[in-house]
Image (tube, rainbow, N blue to C red):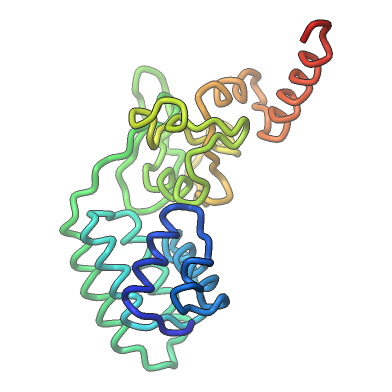
Length: 245
């Protein structure tokens, strides 16, 4: 990935965080379109712990890791380090000593961050552990399945806080008190598995509002997101076709 300045890196990070991810402001500041687009892709892979094969400079890597560390963002810093370790392993025959030194430095720093637990909701029992395994049964008031807060955070980093079914966003309606409020739905019901399984937060989880979440689980075999979307669409059509509507 073409090298960019710290100022451009800062602007790219700001745009990435806004979720608008418009490359035009970066292009107006002198970054070429391809480089701008690749920077957004790199950040996306970095914050979900995935391998990104294109090269980033040591400056870019250190800038982002410091940004996360200074923001006490333990989850994304941990994921970024996972991504970078995959990167150095993939290019094991390439001398990446500077990048490896940066990784080691931040692997120590990440342990100093106290991570605030995510808010969890009735069907999202929190589990503080480093991996993403779920499904171990435990007793609460009734038997429930452990939900991993890290998996939830990765899901929301990827998909945001709009309901995947109806598009509802609590911040848009309630302002500050609704910010970052949403349920996370498991596409594959854990209750049907009865054993631990390795969850993929991007493939297995989706943000949904409490109303849609309740409707998804209205029957024993939960509705899919697409099924519920179709139900909403059909009922809207019926309402619009009523006399006087």
